Amino acid sequence: MYLSMRRTAAAGAAILLAGSGALLAAAPAGAHSAQPTRGDVSAEPAAKPAAPKGKVVSRLPLSIREQPKSASTFLGALKPGTVVELSCKKHGQKVDGNDLWYLLAVKPGYVSARYVENLSQVPLCKK
Image 1: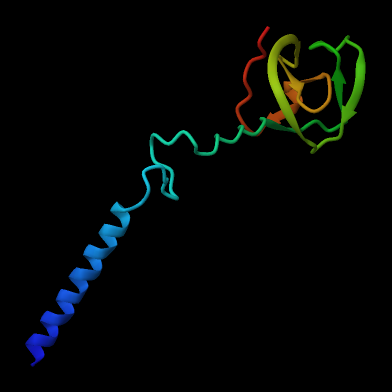
Image 2: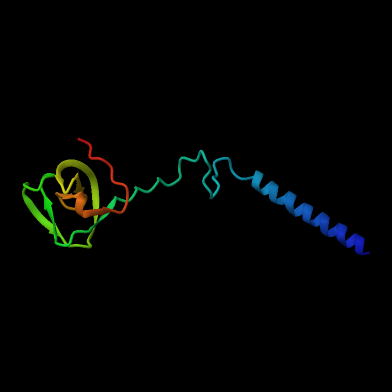
């Protein structure tokens, strides 16, 4: 009796599994699975990478300049400790031996890289 119950249960499980395969095979030709496959072009586009950021490490407010040189027009200042989005870096006037300047992403102007700790990699500006 016990053996026949096990055989009946095994046969029932086989029928269920076979039936589920038949259901999958019977799906319409144009139907897509819920999970994207490697070649699926309908998947969501990749998110745009976040802009590089830097933290102002000067003791006084850091001047924002129109061009990457300290004699350029003053456009404003950033308080020490401010985290800013950076667009790119460019060579300019040396400030304490550092000739890199960062172009700000959110507002126009450059800040000396000497007083900004980059928190992520910053690309060179395209000419």
